[in-house]
Length: 279
Image 1 (cartoon, rainbow, N blue to C red):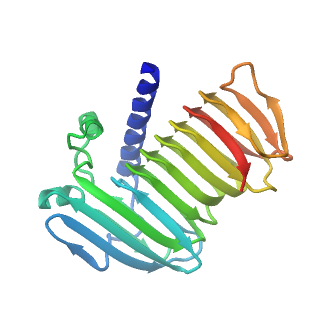
Image 2 (cartoon, rainbow, N blue to C red):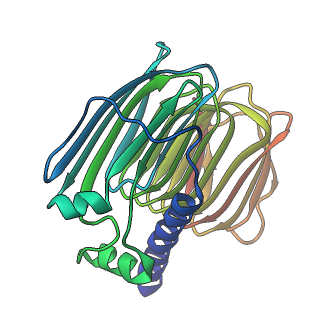
């Protein structure tokens, strides 16, 4: 039991530090940050924004202390709704959210001027620090023809059906991806992960550092090579075209060919079970 608690705390720590790393090293494409229809009061910031996106545009969200939802539509217009609630004006200065957008991207990013390991421990124990002083919510409605990256979120993440790649990292909460195409990467998640792939690119799918169960849904015509390692649970599947190549004496290792084989699906460092099914 103590080991499980330690693993859970470690996973949260890794997710938090991964999120801060991505936040600090990320950059905003284009010019200065822009916001439309923004209202700021002593304890609240609300942003409602809109932008026409070109096919293949990048949608990025980072540093949010609260849930993130990215829904997809058939429209070419992206809609952004951000709620940022803080205790006073000083907290708002420390945790303000910026929205940067152009035809090829939308970036939603929260400021975070507190940090370090002490900040993480205060956040973990509920004593303030980090982004704990702000409660945030981000809801986006974007075209399907986009790529999505979500990093450093303390809350549940939901992504709809997109026709591009999806990358999710440093999440303290459950992750759900309705559908992605090409490439998917999931790293540092403290929560269950559910996602679907309509097709795979040559570099396939990578999942690592998850403290929770994983459900991966594939299209019936997907061909892939599955490699699972460092698993504390088991692997189950409802797929009809799976050839197990190496189940290993150690249940932490599982290798199989899906269909004719092809793009890699690599799953490593999971404290939970892995289940594969059809979309």
